[in-house]
Length: 242
Length: 246
Image (cartoon, rainbow over all chains, first blue to last red):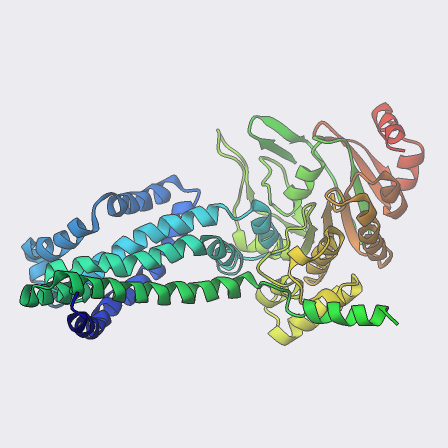
């Protein structure tokens, strides 16, 4: 292995990581924002509403992300109406196509994930919120979703870790994110080992960052200890012993 | 009032009126419909047929028709009524992601729309009343069952309800913890609060209630002032029920 090539490509690929981040962070945010209302509709008692959302999640979870990306990037341009619509400015750009594909895909997985967690919230906790006179929206916002989110967090972390790696598919629609740049470097230098190793290291670093943040979030949301429990326990011990 | 769960009617023609300052105990063996009756009152379960009034207001309900159960017609009305009926559950149902202070302050803040600071003040006052002032920053899972149930009572009280509904408040507790909860309920009865209490604690029911109703098979078998009902039950079934519980 040639260390200088490896180190050089680390530097180049670290730059390309900005595009990877620019693709994944907004996709995750859009995916999250879409998935919360969809998850509630999916969990609702209305069979029509639920199966409409199921159709969406079924299609996007049942087909490869690569196919979805190609359909959006190559396919939408075939449709006359879209080519003449103002949206075309965005949709002819591979970046926005990738962003759209990743957002819709992520939203589908996240919807099902949250749906399960919403349905797992114990009935009695919802009844307590109903009994106090909360509206449906208040129940969802203050009680059901916060509890469901805590349940879903470990699986949601998986979804968040998955997307930066899935975003390597963006290289197939000409985007020069980590994998795209790595492939170009390989074709210029013929040193696939060093370069793809460097790419792997960058992805690992991204994953490490994400997992650390989510571990902190998990710990924070668990409210691990009662806020003053330790203090009062100490005090009462001292008070009891003479 | 009639209610049907699945195929078997749970309540079959129940008429019950609670007046101000009354403490009504609802007795009966398991499956007699006591809890269902209580849950119908704040529409956690919607009766299939019948009429209901709360605080002088007729509740707008849709009767069940071919297969579709009864339903609430005016959601806002029901929310308003629920806010004035404090409910205490058998299994406490405190929200696990909130400290007990937040549990108690949630209703005043979001339903009564009191300013945050005011709601916290109200919550602290009621937590103190049930003897949990020093535990207010704890999460429910760090409290004993008795403490959780007292927090549940404080949560109901913080809404300043016109009526308190207790659904077997001590049934999920270890015997040595029921005392502290019953003490709180007794003090509320002494304050002259209007309460409906479903319980298996017969001796306690006799002591705190002004009126009692005995349910059997979805109907009120006997109803009357506690003093008479407990000492001189008219129905043979109630007589046997009371004997087996002493």
